[in-house]
Image (tube, rainbow, N blue to C red):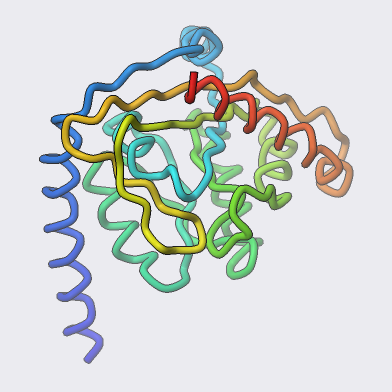
Length: 213
């Protein structure tokens, strides 16, 4: 049964990757407010992309094949998502704020210490939607790296009836991708870093407003 489950996951992931590629190749992607990202890349400074779970699909496409390390839950369909992310050129760290949290934190800090960008959904894996869990703040504090909010909008798309309202831009949609101002966490420890949730939430909202604009 275990082998059958793995084969099923591999099949779904393989089909999913090709569907995503065929769909995304039709999108008209516009990127704005990315100066801080370009400056960080030029300086060799890794960043932590912070994105809402429901906006994951077009943002995965935006940063494909860059070797970004992404945190993927061990819940539910996490294995399928991990396979898709790997096929799109991402590294994966498994865990979440509710399962495997300590291991995930260490894995992310190690990745950023090796110079890799990270991608984290602070409201994943189960919400509430657009709420900031403190895990990303702890990673930024430990890894001494800026959090860079990233958001997207689409001129037309489907919204799944899921807790996060998962967005799938329709073929030939205009997809806007925008970044908020970088958030540096200067706290001395993870407990103090958790006090910065409102500041990160405001920066995430700024990115969304820019993406809608």
